[in-house]
Image 1 (cartoon, rainbow, N blue to C red):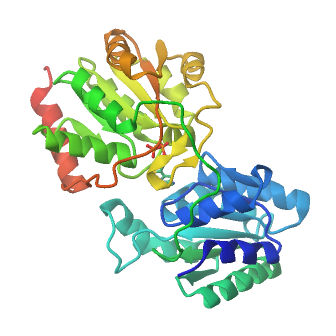
Image 2: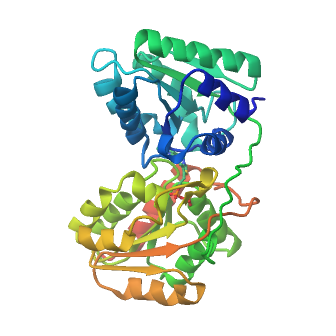
Length: 379
Ligand SMILES: Cc1ncc(C[n+]2csc(CCOP(=O)(O)OP(=O)(O)O)c2C)c(N)n1
């Protein structure tokens, strides 16, 4: 396996000094290491992967150095446009490295949402005419491939990708201590939302641990999963899924359990959610200021004002909850308001390491959810 320190040292030696990206579980140890190696000015955890490409372009224009953008292959969709219409050789021809975590690599078991993405990852890169090398735990070879990738990016003045296989990096513990002053956990909030919501409410849960915690909670409490839609992929799009359901189901609440990282990824959704004016749309952001599901790398969650943002976007109601003792009351206030509403709940990062994964397929989830809506709709 590769030592993240050696990898970071190699990049430094090769003159790569600027890093931007959205974290990934496969790149978790690299992400922790780069956060220790590089100062905050030169390491930006972006709201979405397209933003990382844009920062990399800006940095190259100002310095002439080859920057690095890291992402999970799920984020390829977010980078296609800025890559093809800006960084491409036929447009501005910007050299950069793309470090891509290869979820769903054929032959490696993974969750359903990663299988197709994993299978088409190399074809997507080929279709974009981006040369790539595959990195695994073979350390000497990996360091050489990085050197070749930097050379290729410089020579062709265009992006070169490094596809990283699962378990390529050794464990790395960040030297930066992370403390949270908040007492609630995401799992507690998920449980409270289920407890305080009514039997007719629908829940749309965001990508990552929130969906897993919701699924497991229903299972352990002997409840059906039929009222829940798990947004297992498409990070950042849960609130739009919820608001569109709310539009067609005006006599019930549709509750979106969102994450701060996911909400930030497509923040423009706030304006559209509000413009839809759906009284039954209830947006709950569990804000732990981290991408907790993939390694707890920091987001800007605590430096922005989600409540102010919701109000300015046109949500009829917005509030924040920080204390366990207030949660049930604040949820009930959100649910009793008429008008699109938002509740930001501040929590600490962290999850139970024995948390399960959905045991039903996405298709079963979809069918059950649609049947539930149909069978309980008021004509
Ligand atoms: C487009 C895209 N980029 C990255 C990922 C990898 N990913 C899955 S969950 C997650 C973190 C989500 O953070 P947040 O919404 O704050 O929720 P938390 O994990 O903290 O509960 C990331 C980055 C992804 N699934 N899709």
